[in-house]
Length: 281
Image (cartoon, rainbow, N blue to C red; front, side):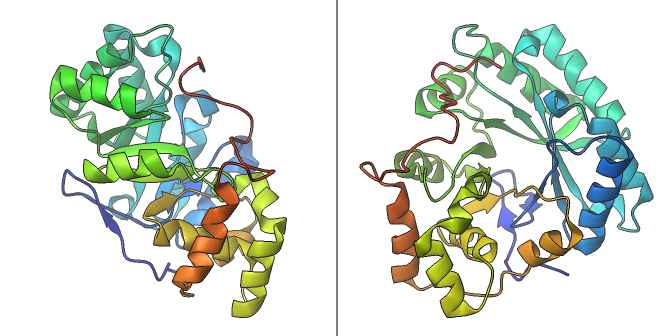
């Protein structure tokens, strides 16, 4: 099944699918099976990280699937301990090999790690990896405005993507407005709010009105606010359902869902308090 949503075009001109498959926790033979099932269901964007320790499983799924490698985009990420320049370059090459040897489609710095304060150095390594042909598109994850301004001011290179926590309880409107102004695509991790948003009365009522699942409503909401969600599911039925996003939400429905994430809401905030200003990973 193919998503009904049009692709995103990154600021480097590369087209990206409108939805991806998160692979956190998909390890071993079961992980390979789940990732392969996602590809066969229609996903053309896989999201992993060196920290997930499943890049070999992603690589194996790419070898097993009937989907040509040229049709799939793979994202992986750099861990905080590897921010020093030479360590970053080695980590990128190692990820490339674990994923099967092809250039990495999208490479992100996973967290800025501000106390370490070497994310600008890491960004220079990522830029040079692109120039060397190890990666195609480059971006960041969990970067707030000050982190983005720092790497852009230091290098003149604007990331193609910023993958951040976005879900109905944490909408992050100021950051999304800032990145949109720079032509940076916002990817949403934990787009379903670890499943919590799927039980919210606002979401379930909208789902009932459209005759669809709560997950389909939330994923469509992401698209209509300009985000690229990467939901995680190992279940083939849910994988397929999450791709079936032909419904269109009204402006009023989008606003009702977005209002769940406003300050003052009893559930407003990050899922587990992972603040990029202090988090070290």
